[in-house]
Length: 235
Image (tube, rainbow, N blue to C red; front, side, top):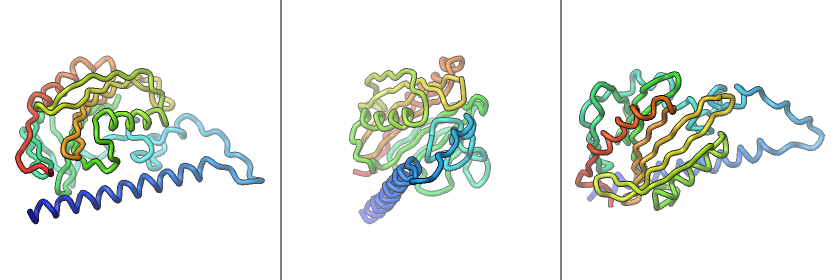
């Protein structure tokens, strides 16, 4: 029980930090969008400067979809290389990393998940993640709506499709977005399987391009089939 309370306290602390960061980012965005009397407006930046991924200025916070996830160097120390079975008792799930690829996770504990880069150019990756639902999204559809707003804020959303789906018997949703990044003609596909369980948001994510989608989606399907819930997940 004490361990469970400690874990929940850690998640609440992480949640509070996330909310504070989101609020600060909103304030900075609002302040940055307004002009001051008598001050000349800033010149419109070039396409590569308007892309947070290209500029490197707060890329992950500003735009998590365009060429900055995973960050360069994520496949080096101190991050941990992983293959085979991945068990995450603190977050209550297990999944098999597909044969022939290497995943990397943060050295910090508890580990929420991992990432797999399938191609650096174009950027193609798989990601598994579990996180406490600090935004009170409650449902998979609500989580996706927040994701979609983020895409629309920074990028060009071309299409969005959703269907019901499951992870090891737990109901959720499968969401497929097509979008373009600032200054980039490439069309990207984001295939996201989301389940909300006991206030935890579980994700299986694939971001790829149309020419690779059929093959890459097979890896996502293999991980979905291997997913199972472990006893002791937070209630």
